[in-house]
Figure (tube, rainbow, N blue to C red):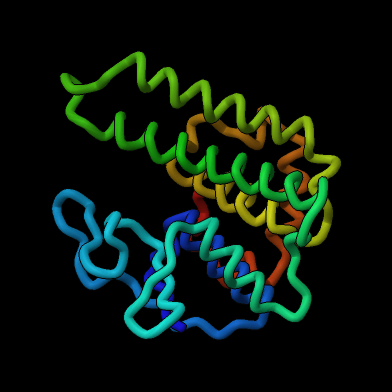
Amino acid sequence: MKLICHPISPYARKAMILARLSGIALDEVQPENNGANGYMAGDNPLGKIPALEWQPGQFLFDSPVICEYLDSLSDAPILPAAGHMRFTQLWQHALGDGLSDAVYNYRMETVRPPELHWDEMIGRHETAIRNAVMTLEKISPWLGEDWTFGNIAIVCGLDYAGYRAEHFNWKKAAPNLAEWHWQKMQTIVWQQTNAYAEAI
């Protein structure tokens, strides 16, 4: 299968991690062109990555769907099939994605020319980043040592925050979460998919 991706994208990185955990070989391909407006033509009609060619000429998107599909191919899926734990994992996954969303939106607002900055919207995204990190700090004792469907998205969101919103210094604000995250940094799949060098 072919995954259209870029390692800097936290959404693409989730799929890259999950494929490795599931023992699935993916052909990880970066988009050939990224137009001036950031639209990725062709594989995803929404113009975003990742996109997974799961059947010839047919692509799955967006990242939670890709991750659930890849997990379903494993002999030992990490997302529970039903019940309370399934929805706990989906909630955690959504929280991790929400952190990535807030960081991305914050960056898009702040890289505009200063005269186009929308201070209220920048503040909105700053609040979302801060609240997501503090919520994760509260639940950090329950995130677990093993990789789960939920904490894959959380790790990717935290790493992206360290890369694109380093001034928030989330590790200082959430020391218990930082300690948990450090354990994930020691794993092979984290190291194989880390594209942020010293930023995190």
